[in-house]
Length: 374
Image (cartoon, rainbow, N blue to C red; front, side, top):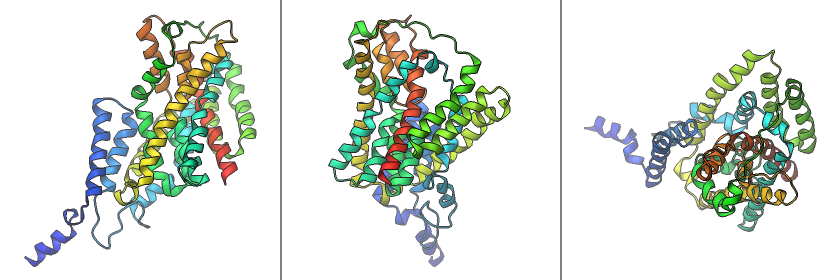
């Protein structure tokens, strides 16, 4: 009986707290949504499983969690905590991104820039709620709907909020098909949703090869703090477009990004230990994240309507919603909402222009915030 008693005292049943149960249930919900609703399964499945693993209580004296120096999860979390994983994700994104639609219609880049209004308005809102300027900057970037960028900036400005910010960013990325359509329909009339845009022009190979180098130089000069993210993004795109490094590009956009996504998602999920995650600050971060995402979506749509006041060839305002950098889900939502009004109106290629511009825009916004708030 003494042996059995000692064994029972080492199990998780004795030390399991209500908070751990809540986080385990949240992890199960993430997995359920990923499998049954197809909400960003590549992200929610690793995060959900990580949340379950991270909330199993360890026996006294055992180092198991991401915050226990020397544990396996501690070393996996190192890539999150030090901002190593996000640039590698950006390398893979660059290797799979086609900037042709953006190059064929450069004015759509402005929609990606306009959507970043959600970042800066949320920054002000977080300051008003009592967060420090550094914490407010890390929270505001959730409005860019870019998980790797949010993790990178939080690791630099507010590592104590990293878990909550990462979960909020990825949660809202997964909920793009739920959050964006009501806002898009509320802010547009049916006649505007029926606008058809001319097919994008064909972009030459030379343009596509020159673009990553030129775009990096311009963007990095504007926001030196984003050099790492932008450098990896455009490096990956150069691997793709140069036509002489296809093997490297293939590795970057497949095996490498898959491995890093697994490690990042699982480590972020494991960091949501109940004693650190279930706090008042986390709830406020989730509220501000939802607000920032809604403002970013509305900002892109309203700026498209503003541009139409001066353009002869009108832009379908729905395209503006793709200015958030949830690639390619926001562009798919634009296509879906547009085809609900007109099944023969194809907006996907047009929406990809502000969508990829939003990736660059969110990285620049993060670089500006890091430079100013450091």
